[in-house]
Length: 147
Image (cartoon, rainbow, N blue to C red; front, side, top):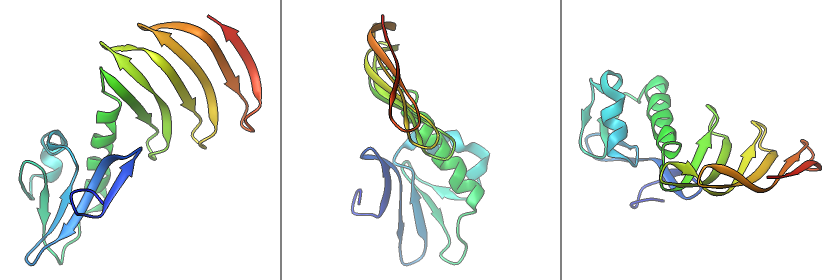
């Protein structure tokens, strides 16, 4: 639940919420910039700063929902300071770590599309640092390299 609505989240970050009202339903992408970026894909719907309205008897097309979700996930991958997460097109986590002034900084993890851990490593101001480890699909350490 986010903002008293059923919601979909990734790592506790809201991706989308929805609600029904007396005269319409609402889709809330948890980001006002998503609706702006969606452009023509949502031009036939009434929008506010944080949501999109659609008729009760006409569900949102799957193509519209996919577009809105992809735009929201792209925002997680555009962070320049703080926690950054990248996702595969199906929503599976691809990489997670921190950014500092637009540079990778601190511990990072990369995952395969099946969800298995592929690699871990650290950065200091965009440069590889410390020990980097690679794993096979079963989680066994394959290689460790010092940087």
